[in-house]
Length: 366
Image (cartoon, rainbow, N blue to C red; front, side, top):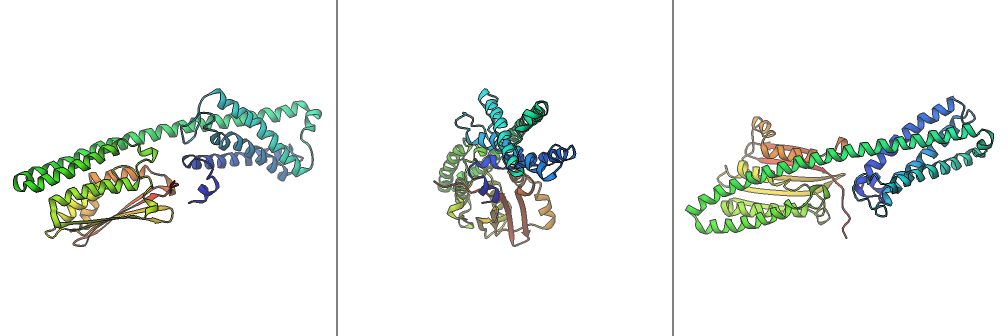
């Protein structure tokens, strides 16, 4: 668990990064406001006083308008993460109340630091007092509108990514199915009992695929356990055709099995290992799929003992359909330093290893 998850464990996991990012932006603007107040002599000419007032007021308003609003999301009947925002009177009323109470609370903190009362300014210069108040309200509302519009843009981008990944899924399924049907046609003519066994395995695999197609990858309902189960069905299906030439193992710690992963993430890699690694080899070989934690990442390796690839073939494999599909999915799981990674290692005659590093967010197991 990261430091951010520890500090904001009381918020939904999908909202924590956004909340922290908005706080950073608020604090950045608060610093420039403090500098402006210091230069204009608004806080007795003391820079420390300007900093305390600016950061206290901005942080209080941020806390009441942003994380507290998300905490009360069920009460406000707002379920659309990760920003949990809705254009509704009750939400805008919460923001208005948050601005008012945040300004009052932050002012009290600043007054306690300086040992004076800002509210005396109301009796001394009402115009100046209301100017401070109005500027604070306008700034808070400006932040609210900005964060809301930015959240809408991020949501539209997420929906576009989901649509692209769904399209990739629809491309991958026929790709695998046509290959299997071609193999089944050959077995029907040469080995009918194995063809029947293969047809049974195909039925199991299609049932698992149908269940997987009904899950939402963004909702995190497809787990590593589901992916391993579907992968096992596929490998058993291939084992009917290849017989003892194909051996496989799937290994993962129990605490990682509930981790969400995109559907059909590993199958393209295993299919490549079977077709390009083991099938060309007379003796066949072994496919090992392992998962383990590597710091803040989930490390998944697909290792085969097949024929391997030359460096030139390895470079061209980066553009292949299956690997390109996997890269696309992994790239959608994060950005910046938290983005996933795909690494391919291969040597002629020594097999191929494909290593996936995915952002690790362990779910709570009930």
